[in-house]
Image (cartoon, rainbow over all chains, first blue to last red; front, top):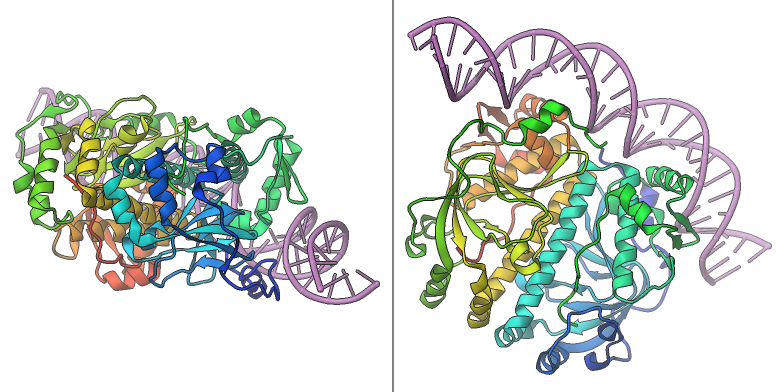
Length: 272
Length: 272
DNA sequence: CGTAATCTTGACCAACGTCAATGTTCGTGG
DNA sequence: CCACGAACATTGACGTTGGTCAAGATTACG
């Protein structure tokens, strides 16, 4: 079952799409104040009191940009990068000794990046930009006072982690007990749903910047088999995916097919 | 890939080993004070200040016993069971519509049970006793004041969740990118290691109460294929598993084989 | 317009699931 | 203490899912 890698694949995924781009890692760009954060206005975060929001805003130290393919956090070393993803897509992923890769989760705007390093001073996985990305850099040292001062914010942060854990459980079940077509269907629905809840899409179509190889790494299949599953789903009229555009004609139909169930009134990340 | 189920299997796993046992669900048994908790004395938990320990001890409301096969928490409904596993083994697991089952994690003494219900008022998975089990029942309503009063305890709780997440990531990689023998080897090492860090085993052998079917549900394989993998591991001299007794001659050899890496100075659950 | 990356497909092979039959262990009642 | 039966463990034979290889079509982008 371990899908081995060719020389070519390995070098392709080192920086997909990014060739000789001169934009270097973590460029500072014009900042956005938390109080006027469009994500927060969209209801992507749980509502905060004025006082809490002030403390959160004080944590933001910078606004950085990364090119597609760049690593925001790399596997193995210690250190304290701590971000909120503001714009674009990223992936938490783990690379094995044999070069094969598992995408642990796809990160969307509003998701927190780097909590493990902050709390555990260890990083078992990397975070890589899938598209061009901007992030809010957070001052990790302030998290202690934040938690001490705002108990309800700490609870919210905890609840967000627990919710992440539930999503992780769902993915585990997906890989352990479900077939290729269901895996793909589930992943696509999950992404669509998360985007929708953050007010980032409207119609029944949306942009899906993931390549086939990345889909494969996310659901634990080979690139070729992902193709087969996609074709099967298309044949059944469940999805349409061409030119990076995903269309799901009937969300409920696909949900039934892939065993996806809608999460409760989910508020996601706790802070910006 | 979805391992379907026979009629017989389904009814077997409903209450494995427990037939007409009269011991009912959640019997109260003699309690143990947190201050003298043997687990804490073994260093299973992160050290607490006297003040913190007092608050934690105040949360403990009862000490309950469950028979093997009983559900401590059942899938789907709302409600606030909140425990620390004190003695015995349990499993978080999710049952699919077709009757197949995924074990999301094996719970050992010291692990927290029920945080999702407390924080999310939703339970996407059940928790089932694998052996006879006793738990410390916690008063869920007190968690808010606990977090507000003891910031460092809240951070610890958060860190423990993040650490859990890392283990979940490892399991995902396991199912997505590794073969049957590696999956089994990894699971066994992980269990052994967690037991050892809590001072629950000493030699190179230990009791492994998991049945073959449960191993299978944990690593996303069929019962039969688990057998094949076990045989292969035994042939290679990596493990010996007979009569519920697991022996790992060379931990480092098995670790190398299965891609297992030892976690940092891990302190696990934050409270009792 | 040309080159490299990605997508797509077919043919073939390995890993894993399913079915079914036979031992083994263990608890229970005689 | 022994005999019985019900889970549980183990194994072989065979079918299905998914991986690998390799070639061509299409797209993205300079």
